[in-house]
Amino acid sequence: MLDPADAASRVTPRTKAILPVHLYGAACDMRALGALAERRGLGVVEDCAEAFGTTLDGRHVGTFGDVGTFSFFGNKTITTGEGGMVISRDEALAGRMRLVRGQGQSPARRYWHEVLGFNYRMTNIVAAIGLAQIERLDAILARKRAVAARYEALLRGLPVAFQRPADGVESSHWLVSVLLPPGTDRDAVQRGMAARGVDTRPVFFCAHEMPMYAKGERFPVAENIAARGLSLPSYPTLEDADLDRVADALGAALRAQGLA
Image (cartoon, rainbow, N blue to C red):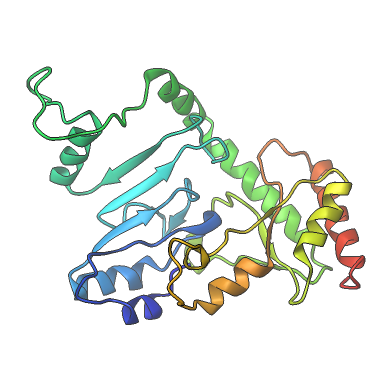
């Protein structure tokens, strides 16, 4: 999650916008980031790929900045297989995005292309798939929140830490992720759980550590989370018995390392 104080220290004359990422269903501090953007004359582009259904003070993420982006990839809360959605409170910017999305074709003159554009249009079929899920969104979110709550109860006796949304945030709990104890062999934990039929994922690696972005920068908080984080099965059709099995597998994998 983007630290507003750290973000402020990294603004340079070349900075054009702030890009808060609402990670795993939690929400960034949009009050502080919005104030920073206003002071420095910056745009705000919210990455809500993992936060469909997340609210801050009753307001949906993606509506605080100039632009909000959402993902409908196959593993997201609402899916169309691929694709996504962009929203904006700036009507001129929204119109520009619609124009570029549709190959730059004029909305008023068929087959007349005003600008160089792209084919980013969603098909009617996949849009219908997404809209059908929107009708069940409340039930999907309720189950995902119940899954997260049950994991917290089941894993209470283990030395793992959960993501804690800030005050005023109602998380969509897109993915339940835990921090393993320092020094844990996460790969061994994953192998142990896989042997019991439970698939897991490491949390995302840091972008600044990847070859094309490496500049010798350090982000110690992100690096610590990336090294210790483990994401658990979180889809809404999981039964309570499935969650019990995941918890048992995690406990066994930690005990194998003398950590539980």
